[in-house]
Image (cartoon, rainbow, N blue to C red; front, side, top):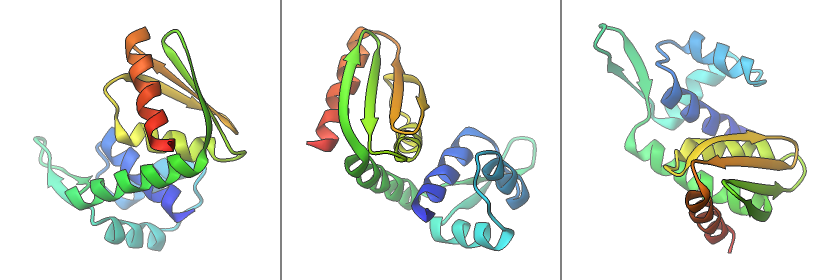
Length: 149
């Protein structure tokens, strides 16, 4: 659960200019994570998040390079242990996972910010990956296949 939460935190701070722990808690709760301030405080410390200055004078959370490296390691672990099959159709890739693992694997995909991916949707055991075109979908499927081989 903690690895999934850490992956989600890194995804959120990359997507939104989160400036406070309270904001981070609100985003996590909106995504179904029941967290407390003390849990978030520990997570921030464990992920080695820092605050950087924005042009408007506010500070936002940002992942350190070591946190990003940890996220990539988490991606490998989550993805390779979750995925059952990978199929491509036109500009989409359909990934079947073990039951209950699709959302964690999908969050890991989103965090990796692959250039070939426009968006993802996760269910209980299926992830739909939408790519910009057929060629990018083929590359994406091949890349994903390499992670589970």
